[in-house]
Amino acid sequence: METRDAISLISKIREKVNRFIVQEMAKQGVDGIATSHGDILYALLSKHRLTMAEISAHIHKDKSTVTALVDKLVRLGLVKKERDQEDTRYVYVTLTGKGKALEPVFESVSSAMLKQFYRDITEEEQTILLAILIKINHNF
Amino acid sequence: METRDAISLISKIREKVNRFIVQEMAKQGVDGIATSHGDILYALLSKHRLTMAEISAHIHKDKSTVTALVDKLVRLGLVKKERDQEDTRYVYVTLTGKGKALEPVFESVSSAMLKQFYRDITEEEQTILLAILIKINHNF
DNA sequence: GTGTGATAGTTTGATATCAAACTAAATATA
DNA sequence: TATATTTAGTTTGATATCAAACTATCACAC
Image (cartoon, rainbow over all chains, first blue to last red; front, side, top):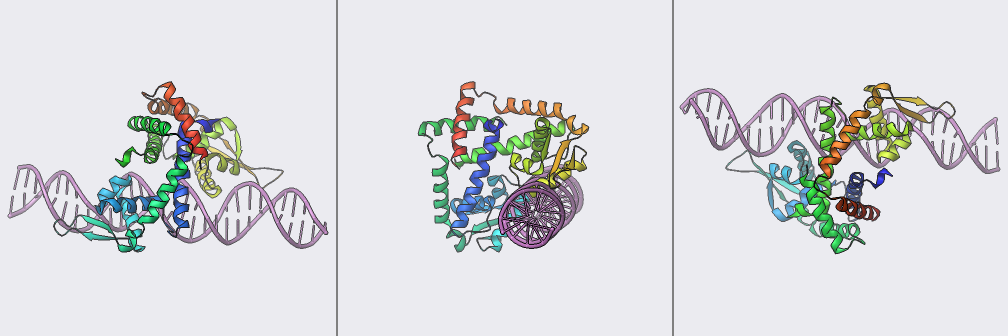
């Protein structure tokens, strides 16, 4: 069975994790949000303020994609954009009150996801998995 | 470092694998093809003939997505669509000569990718990885 | 047989995504 | 100082993708 293949499993797992997160978020009332939007919001919870380029690097998406994603978050009232006064090329993105209010939802979804992901996976297996994945990631 | 997290590594690895495959294919003259197109062609190499629904199940993409993907492959002259004579609801997709001619390219790209993927990963680690991924895949 | 429901595909409208071209601003070089 | 280069971000055009609505065909019940 080719479904046993590690690479196709990685694709499938990623797909399922994404679907799980989007569904859980929707269940908790956060709707119309894709995982990339979630990645941005999640980053802003700890980083407070990021430029467009920093977000791009952080979520591994093209800067033009980030423009579209952040603009949607602005439309949803979850973040705001401000130009740097000194160097007006920079745009800072920060969470609004409404955006910050999502923190508990993220915590809950994130922990639910991890619980599901690692169900029946021992601590030792988790450590081994991580080590192997780090090596594979370095191979490219 | 959150980049150490298994789930984000899975996303990154999948992304890199996809990019690698597309680049290698392009290097060998197969251009304008996304991984999903490759998945369809690859499936048709062993299955000979598949319906749209079977392709959809095989590559885990919505049937409407498959319509678009297969139509592109038709435009590229790599596959052809034919209605079942008995039950005209079914559409059979098969490789053209030009499509079949891609087999060696697929073999070469696939083996190059596996080599890169598993570089410095021992046989034992590969087995363990597979076992853990199968468990995680079942968790969702 | 006629009508109801199931099934296979397509169409439509929306979104995420990228790459390339572009704008605007800052920095370096001459 | 003026010009060239780099940098940050946006715009534009194309594609993959999905969900929902739709079309066409088949199967089954009455």
